[in-house]
Length: 269
Ligand SMILES: Cc1cc2nc3c(=O)[nH]c(=O)nc-3n(C[C@H](O)[C@H](O)[C@H](O)COP(=O)(O)O)c2cc1C
Image (cartoon, rainbow, N blue to C red):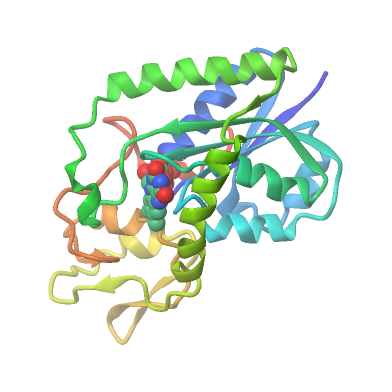
């Protein structure tokens, strides 16, 4: 019997939520394990060997991938496998999932199935995105389930699903990716700004950071230039002392009412 696995990175929980739903649905057809990219950067090659079908999931950042996912891709040694790629976004990415599929292809991993999931906004300090409506968790759950069903059905029947492959989506993706990849981390230095007057030194941000970017120096939280703009610390700081751009008013705490941010590290539950 074929075995599948999903590698996922999720800053604030949306992509993890979708990955869990895909895992649960795929398990009806074949065994499927879930791995967090941030905790499996070093053993990726051993893990890949053991599976026939590889899933990759990430949040869209400027029609591109979080830099931790690029790091993960860089570590992959060429191997011939089949894959599927999904991404979450608040609005639009053009060819966001197709871009990941093209990068996987350079390693010999061939994806025939790409899907985009529109999820709640986690960019809570960017003025343009502050119009976002209240989050309807019940609607999100139904929407994700329907799209996951479509994706897994296509995988089971081996019918390709190539979202974002047309020239128009590719062009829009390319337009957005250019400036993002030029000005985003890791090029942008000292991305996270810390309001030391507000900070209560609870160290939650230090614990949550996927890249060990935040640490305590001279009795204060300090930024080590490793920020990937995942917005996990920004949204989960209990006193809103952290920001990338403006101070935030309403943090995004996850895709369900009872979402626990620490679950983004959990492998198979
Ligand atoms: C730095 C950054 C850039 C983003 N760029 C886009 C974008 O280009 N298009 C879009 O629709 N959403 C964009 N988003 C929104 C996220 O992709 C979206 O909220 C995603 O579901 C977050 O997933 P996560 O909770 O798994 O981290 C961006 C978010 C961040 C933090």
